[in-house]
Image (cartoon, rainbow, N blue to C red):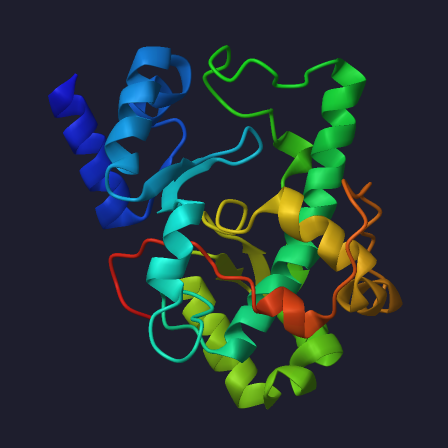
Length: 240
């Protein structure tokens, strides 16, 4: 088991994410003893496993108690550990709201319809069937038309979008922006979804025609500046 754990941890740190269907990833999801050993090994380094039943990948991130030590050094609180500037973080949050929120709404509705609540963490080897629930992507031109000028203009928008694609948050195909391996893992849905839906960004998205009617877990109001200031708990093998 030790060798398998070493390999899985090393791959997670080196590649930042691995497919859920990978044999070692699948073992971590269905073998309770292996999962506990993995979580203990990561915890010793201040890390935690990032996975949810709706995502096709697993990754690692900082444990909450490590945030102050990692993000709070120096005079300024860091927004992430990948070197992303503030406007790139804002673009990332916008894309998450445009792509992941509608996808999650469909997935939750489908799970409720079929009675599959994914309550047994170790009972399934793969996430809820995506199929038609796969995010269709959003046009780059449409995103820029709605948000580009507020996110630094065309040059900054294009540069930041390219950086997000390089880091694995999004995929770019034929002027369309699609969900990347990390987009559904590196932002805490339960924490951020209510803040977007109930906050100023929710109003902007509704004005732009994006449907985000997800039932919030709690009433939290914020503005876009507060949202983008949330630290992204990322572990990267490359600098932004």
